[in-house]
Length: 84
Image 1 (tube, helix red, strand yellow):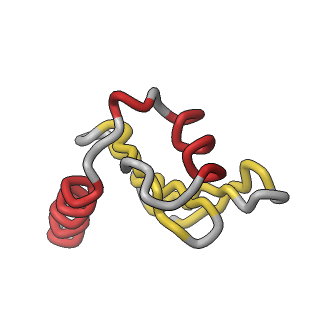
Image 2 (cartoon, rainbow, N blue to C red):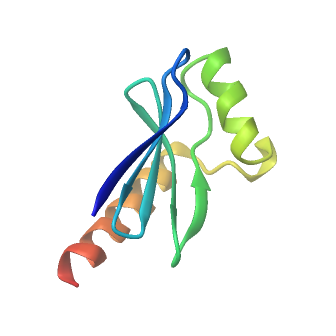
């Protein structure tokens, strides 16, 4: 099952749900994901002020994950989901 929820159409913030995985987007950029096995994982900001505001609304800045670790965790999760 896939669903799309627009959080704010003006700034194009959305959540795309694929099975039990929520993917958080700012415009077309994946900035966070949430899954029962990982919890909410939010990337450190490497984009701009508007994205930083969105990221902080999801989780406090000190809990943001290094972008490379963010990508690695997501890839591992996707590989696990593919095998299920």
